[in-house]
Image (cartoon, rainbow, N blue to C red):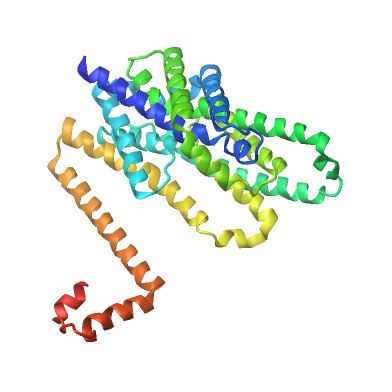
Length: 379
């Protein structure tokens, strides 16, 4: 009984975090552009949208997360705790490290890690999901670029939209597309928190979408203030028309994937749409920004990171294998060491003058003794 309560607590806490990050961000464009002036009103709109999305169309993705990747025969309450725990740990560590991870990719990665540990995995369904992860963000990029080019060519003919009497129309359009983006988040992302519970038979699909949608909405309304503030300030460079195109395009693609029961990374889709619009506005200079490299890292790191954690938890607590645990631990330590060395190398490359001055201050500084070579090597 205790382990079941723990599973529900982790799932609902995970749902609130999904709402605080992804769902709240859906109204970032509308809030940042001034279409919705009060932050709390924007959060309420996103909360209502995500709840309705979960209730109306979240069932198919819940089924995929619950039973489409690994067989339900190996799903029990202990496995559910491991899947949700690995997802939560991955997001927690990523937040500390400042790495934005996709909740869909993290959850799928955790489920795959369990499947690998028990050698029970529906690889055909997994390949379809990964294929969608590649195709949909790329499609978002090209479609956004095309829309941006069309808006530029039609700019002279659309000057009437800049008149004050049409401002309300554009404002309503941005709010509507933001609501649709929240709706799509409810259809797709709520399954990440309750899908394992449904797969283990602890909840029905309808109960799971209701409970998950409710707590994702609560997370968006109560905990999404900082996220929507950050996203709103970053999106202010877009016009109302461009912002509505980004939100509407992302929402359409995510809703389409949800109808087929495919969990997709909404963050990457929105980012690729923004890059596509940026390419039409600023040209190839947009590719010089670090956001492209960060996007690629998120694609690779999100599922692999949670996969390793869930696999390790299974091997430690349920199916102990000393060799597997040792290998995973060594890989983890080697990864941390590599990251540390890369950061140290970047710091030296970014500020070589500081490094030379630091050496001079140690070697020949006034009033200081010359330190041994071994000490200088570790400074």
